[in-house]
Image 1 (cartoon, rainbow, N blue to C red):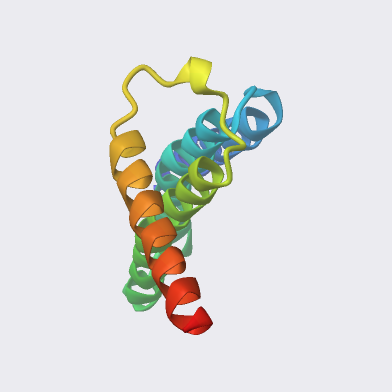
Image 2: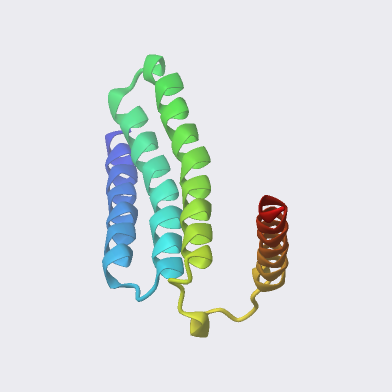
Length: 126
């Protein structure tokens, strides 16, 4: 059991380190976002599983599961919000995007917002 725990802890630590190196080495926000979420969630799972094996008690398993589920839920959501904010603030290198599915929806939303602003300013003048 100690060998299994050690292997899981080392693998989890390595995956978390890979995520950290990806944050430093990747060129743009979308690549860094991917590096921050994908290996980190799996790395934390392996580390928590190794911790569960190392502690050799079932009492900590619910706590470890809750910790992993919290990471599993929050990491993709935060990455999505960072990616969306980056896209909307135009801090994105469009050369790295193969298909831009949001461009049409954003343009339509901006057009509607401009029309609403024009309507508000014309009603204010009257």
